[in-house]
Structures are given as C-alpha cells and as structure tokens.
Length: 195
View 1 (tube, rainbow, N blue to C red):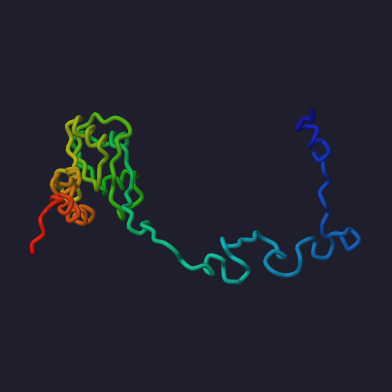
View 2 (cartoon, helix red, strand yellow):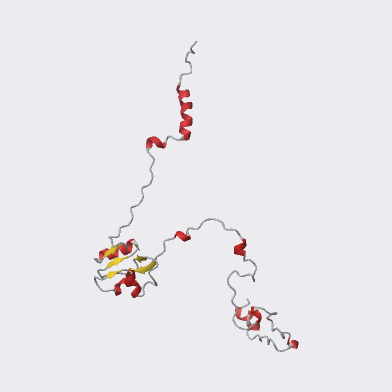
C-alpha cells in the first residue's frame, strides 16, 4: 500500500522557478505575467466578485425571476439575558444603555432579548421583542419587560384556525350537483303519468 508521505516525497523540495532572469531562462521578459494590465504590474491584484474584464457580468445578463421576502424581514440586534447581569439592580435598560455598554453596535434596529444564560437581578427592560424563555426569566427575577412604547410587553394571541361547520361542510359544488340526481332517484319508478 502506497503511503501519503511516499507520494509527496518527490515534490517536497521542489525547486522554485527563477523568473525574469533573461530570455534563456525560459521565464524572462514578462516573467510569466503576460503583457500589460493589472496583473503585469506590482502590488496586489483585486478583482471585484463577478467581474469579467469589462464584459457585462453573467448575473446582469440573466433576467430576474421570483420573489424574495428578504427586504421585508424583521431584523434585530440580539442581546442575551446573561449579558444583562452587568447592570445594577433596579436599573432601566433600553437601547441607549445597551449601546453605552457596547452590547449593540447602534440604535438603527430594535433589540431582541434572548434567554441564553441566567438573570438574578430585578431589571426594567425596554426592547422590541423577547423570546419566551427570556420573558419568563425576566419575570421570575422580579423584573418587567416593556415594549418600545413603554407598555407591558405581551405576546400576540394565536390566530384561530378556520373550522368548517358540520352542516355547511358537506355542501359544495359537488354536493349541489349531486342533489338533483338524488331527488330523481328518490321518486317511485311506477308513478302514473298525467294524461
């Protein structure tokens, strides 16, 4: 069985090519860089992603398809319950206090409190949203969770599922179409014809 160190043994001390040492070296003149352009000159070469040398990029040549909800996503700055233990007992914590503490980068987005960690201090927290575990831990510690308006935070009530009524569930297009056929079948076959 051939081992990995045996495969690479012949290339371990491979001699590097000496470029730009005259035409007789085989890598003279342009030293393997081609002619002109950004790659021929010194310094780092940076090509922006998708760039095709001035040709219209492939992502611009193809039409747009479909729909994305990315623009309508609700985005939050995330803060865990464990991070709130640094504040004094009884203090009011809002986005400005979190910014001063370095827990959020800015106040452009609302804050969401998650339940990772433990909380033993009684705090009044003002945030855009709370996870259920975070809300329970804040309440258990004696603190209060408020929304951005300063009101007591409440989770939205679950929507009621649509339940069809028993009488109307059977009715439909098929049931209505089958109703005349059932009426004809219910009539007696030996009914005397009117003359």
